[in-house]
Image 1 (cartoon, rainbow, N blue to C red):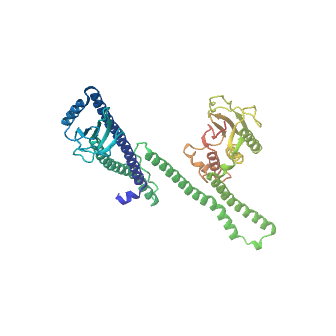
Image 2: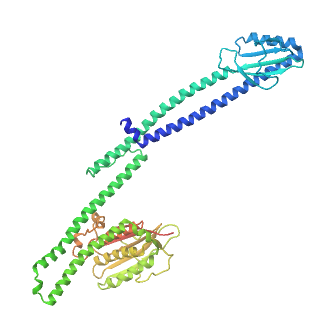
Image 3: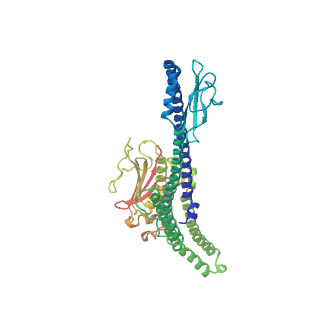
Length: 482
């Protein structure tokens, strides 16, 4: 990656912003530390000057003026570099001893600390001077320069400059390397996306197994691509199924129109033909209406109409509706409810076990089971499952409906006594317009189970098929309201 491309990336801008903030924070910290260090050392110099004046005053009180002169002489001999100033003058201003020729006009008597230019070789250092008038009128002046403070300040400034430069270089290198790693992962995702755009839908984002943010992003994208691929396969299958299922009624409609001379038909034959053709057209329109309804459900727009729905009366109404239809073929429809445990969910009914049956209304009062959803869609899904169960059950057979709780879920299972669904076909029958060979002779378009699963997933649930031993057991699971 060339620098121009890198600088245009969000990662580079974040790195540069982080480096700038780090440098600004470091500069502020260095300035504060320098200020505190210089302030501490200046206070130390002032204390040293004041202590020296107190020493000379004590000497004056013991040995009087000769003692002060002797002590100042010792100080000057011991420190010839000029880092200290001593001056002792009499009441008339005549110099008695010191390394200044005269009393500076800038130094008033007993007026706190004054700054003067240093007498030492470091001319950029300042002197901290304080004066005192002794009891006999003699004036004393003592000053120490700040060459040590200047040296420390210069050292801090140099160290700060080197530290800032090192921080900038190391921060830039570390940020560049970090961004390169991030951009490399993103570039891998980008290359995969480009190959998919070019038509290779089998491409997936490679995972490194690190379980970091990029791996999780790649896994999410791969799951999304798998889902898109499933939808495209389903769309292709649906298109083929539509072509297959609609070819027959449309071809029959066309052949009838080509072979019939309407003008030669009697009124009765004409009415019969129109009725037959209308039936074929209604079949085609019904397929498209079901597909449109399925697309609307899968889009999720109907979640806005969700309300708390009592589930037991809904199941009871659906069972009551299909009891009359099932009775025409001597098929018994039974409804039972599992005991609702206080903490744990009850064990589901095994595939081969008998189900306690009651016909008609709910046999015993149970705590109200409510789900958040659309009552019409839920009723349709239960009716679709009951319709399949009755349709594929043999005459004189039995359809068992069971409602039970399983933790936070409500489980509605419907078992028929039909031929069942092979294991390898139990997922495929949920696809649009898929009909098994064994069900080609029965009415329908192959959209019932697709609608049931779409409605279940719209409500945060799921629908699956299991072996009913014999027959099929369809299980609809929905999250219940607490």
